[in-house]
Amino acid sequence: MKDLIIASRNEGKISEIKEILQDSGINILSGRDFQEIKDIAETGDSYFENAFIKAKVFWEYTGITSLGDDSGLEVNILNGKPGIFSARYSGDGATDKSNREKLLNELKGVTYERRDAEFICVLVLYDGREPVVFEGRCKGKIATEERGNKGFGYDSIFIPDGFDLTFAEMETFQKQLISHRGKALDALVQHIKSKNL
Image (cartoon, rainbow, N blue to C red; front, side):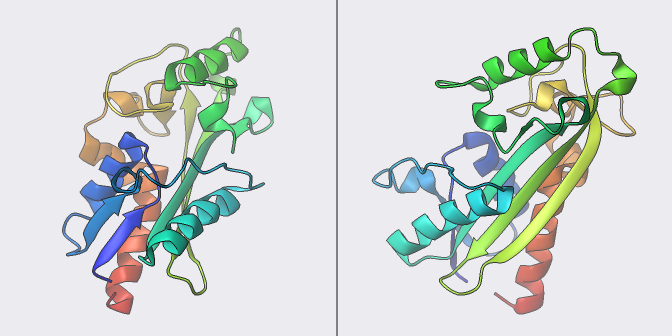
């Protein structure tokens, strides 16, 4: 595998994936290199389905092995919300900021002890044959306010178990060791090495 397309235009996701794969010897492309591909509707009922939809569209258009990523934040007391709707939680025109604000508002008055949450990332590698799936999870709690300016998405309100820092307060390398996406990408790297791709 000489080339790999990250089937996303999300700059945060692209940079995280590129950084972890930088020593793989693979030429990394992304959705930003194929502006002619329209934004892909995430119509699946699961992280896997959404990731696969994205990877399949890019592979069908380019014939290049593609990596779809879908991830979400599941908050226990909200029955798993926002889940697969994490990126568009606050409705049409949702931004990272508006999504965080909605979540924090919904958790107003909830004690820290009851703010258990889990980040989930599912990666799908697709080359026209059977999709290969990698999953990573990271448990933690939702902070009572935003902290830190690194990262993206819900990073500034997620505190992983065993830490006092939010993802947005951590250095990138530190976050990647424990994050949901870091774990899924580590499994992908091991797969690439074991298969000599």
